[in-house]
Length: 321
Image (cartoon, rainbow, N blue to C red; front, side, top):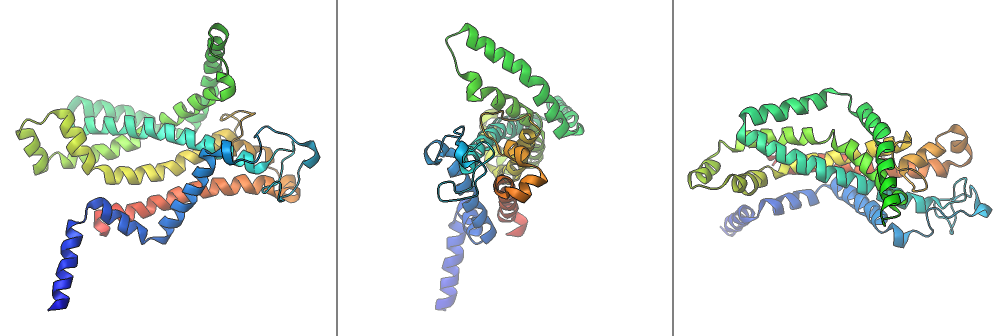
């Protein structure tokens, strides 16, 4: 009897437990997810606090330690210009963080979620217009279009920013890398919103036929309240999963654009640029740390996001509960 009463109490407690608490509890039992989160937090903390934790300035050159292997003074070694590899890795991670989060917040979340809500709720011409525009973007070769946007847009944006510096009191915009951030973010945003919009649209098409939405409409709830207080919270689980999976793809795209020379430009370091400068067999034979260090960081970023996305899909998918 005591055992049955205890089991009943546990069951009642689990029912009272919120959806978020249950998801966190399930996620905490997945070792792969915990390791992925720990890796991402460590890498992102290093990138965010790069100005304070990096041992040197990213452009500082010491010609007495050119191509030195890892040591106590340079934990990840130095490159061909005598620059500290660890310092440049931290700043490269920071650039990746800024670009991927800007692109995800503006494209994946703001544009994608908003258009998905509108298309699914209103239907009709709004739905047709959003889907046709999205299908045009989806039918194009994504990465090659990103390359074209980055290659053709950057000179024009750079010219405009230089005009602003020459004709106003604002200076240092070009040196700050704002041109590169804007161009790459725009290239990433252009092709990341439709997947999110399509996912949210599908969720809304199902949710708007449920009783609680019909009840909200019957009592005269406004459209913005229905969209953002009733529909969006109930579609948040698949959004979280898609965001986590997309972050790895976007980080890889940013690194690849920089590797092609279309991303962050020198003197600011980037993971793709470091891979480009060290991407030859001679470097791998004689100075492997110059190639392995940025390659390992890029691999960990992409792999950790993908593994975390798989774990979140298992945790938040109602069919696996």
